[in-house]
Image (cartoon, rainbow, N blue to C red; front, top):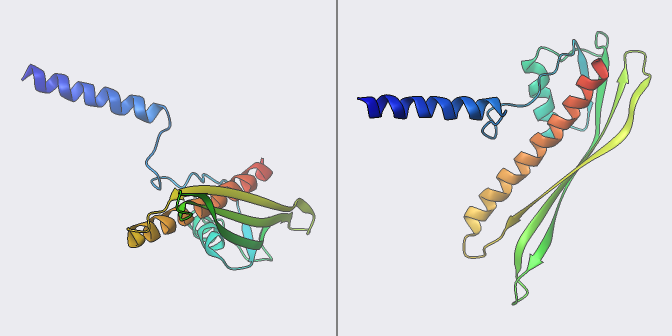
Length: 163
């Protein structure tokens, strides 16, 4: 009985320490505690655009052009894949995905608060030609991860402009 209580207390202590450090499982928190009242989202519909629209909708911050305090424009999104390293037989061992999102922010009077700016995020992943299906799935996960990271950075810029 004492051993069970000891194990329980140890688990509680470790859980508390982990929570205090701010550590979270990937995807468990969007990281976007945006406190803006209204944002109009425009631009090129893309995956990052959709993630931002979803987050703004969850925070009840998405507004029409006429009522918005800020206008966020996603000008362009490019995803590039390149070979990052090769094996001795010249086959690709590792790929690198690079996402570049160009955005700008203006206020309700069309004053530019953030000139067109690029966010560039890169991630690498290993490639195994014997496991094409698994590596294709890994590439999709990495792609989604960097799109979420780009959306998080853009939303943080919106929050900084609200202060």
